[in-house]
Length: 241
Image (tube, rainbow, N blue to C red):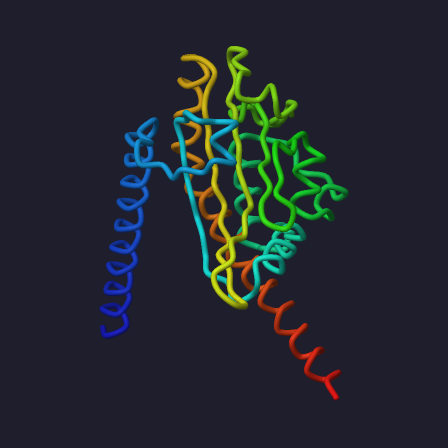
């Protein structure tokens, strides 16, 4: 009798947790849908404004890092997102949902920046040791998405119908001695009404995974930058007379 009651209680708890999770997921989807195109409070950034002054999606994520900006930026440039199981799971979920072909082993062994360049992203601007702006135009609703780069001088004016333009940054800003802030900005703009009609539901469904990847990137860069800075400090201390 007690065992039966315990099972019933556990089942009710699990059902309640599932219901709460489903409700939270639906609330996120609804919020993402209705927020689309409403970016009046987006963050200003002169570096990225040059390439996309007006957008339909604007996201910024940042984290404080106990390492100088140059160390943090170097760690960001060497970032390998594929080593995160969470990120691997998100990529795999997209492949399953859209029936896409898995990424090649060759691509998976590269750093994040190298991988982005290999699949078509271009560098729009770079401040050595501080920031990089990457951009591409694409049709992300296709299963096997293809990214196309453009020369920096042509990116802002590009408006061929049926496409989505995306720019994102990796940036490290000094915050006092031995400290910095690592930041990533992402902006998206469509080139016509048809592209917007197709991209809005795509973003609604996949935004959660995309934003989770951003958060994992912050954590990985922070951990690696602080590890490098601490290792350098120990090496300097051990070599001192």
